[in-house]
Image (cartoon, rainbow, N blue to C red):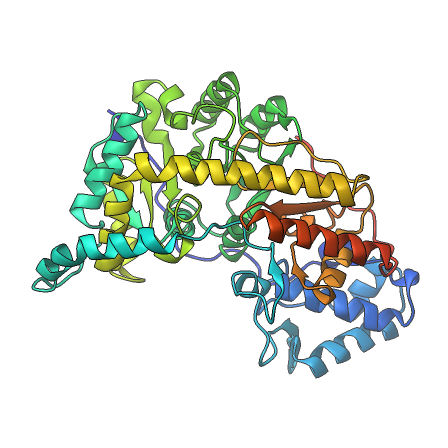
Length: 496
């Protein structure tokens, strides 16, 4: 029986040390000999890492002497760095216990600002999420009004999710080739909520989790905040290195692996069927839980939509695979409706954990999601055709205005993973704001700091004219000149 698959009970005691090692911090920082004054440059780099979540809040920074040794600089320089961090609110000191990271008043982590709309008239290319047509929303709201009226006479709490929606999601899995019953479905407030619940139940601080490199930034942030030890496996323009993936599962034996095999975010790659089978077998041998992110699976532009990953598992091993999905990429992120498919016993435990945070999702949103799912056969084809047109428009604009950049046209998904040819992504993203374009550099998608500085993820979720204007503005920003990128330290790259 799939539901009988064992999993290790989670010890809630946090055994991780809340101290950042000097070598670990030094590896994340630029070479202090590359700029003057060095202390200001280092303080700015540390504050950026705190905002980006790569250095957690309330963590003890290394002793001044240790960090100075690791950076090959003077202790006076590090003292000045820490003084500046304290003055700017990014650190505070405790008498006799060192210097600890903090968040200044009025500043928000980049995980929050990334989700906020751009200021003024900036074109937003930081969020790969489509909008919902007004008429579709209006008609759906009118359709659910009578159902909502019936629900207002009930308490309205559904920790597992609205029964009708659970049944619809289960039927969707079954229709795609993976037999599923409603008891195997937990409705969540988006796929990110589903992942956070799974990490909280199946992992404890210090556990190893496997993730692709690059990967979805918010998923990586959830792992960092859970104080999990991330081990990465590469995804290139041509896809996964399955030998490294198998070796990582065999040698590291991670507690959990998070994968995006369907039109991978950000590369757009689609994992072949044979490689899925190999990953499943390797995870079975290591006893690793597989968390499969299917949020982009329906956005197949040039190929048939892939079946669920777990369909490639033997019937007795599907219980080792947790599948998460969402309506954010196919419909609208504002719905905040996602789900996970797992063994029924695990769903019950996850629902119990979920009650501690929100007790259940909005009935209104779930009814709206239900009616949109039932219309998927009519709503999805126009959305896919719209994305094809926008993808073509983005590719044409890049060819016209930035022919030196290269990319691979993905068979599905929402964005291009563009190679700039030189490590200027962060500088370009910062300068592009002055030209009215908000975009994320490739480092935000990296499991390790300093990687993918030559990459941009460019979504094609806005109209063709807007895409053309955005590319033209970025070309102008690039032509007007960027600040010289700082010299960074050589980063150690983990290879299985």
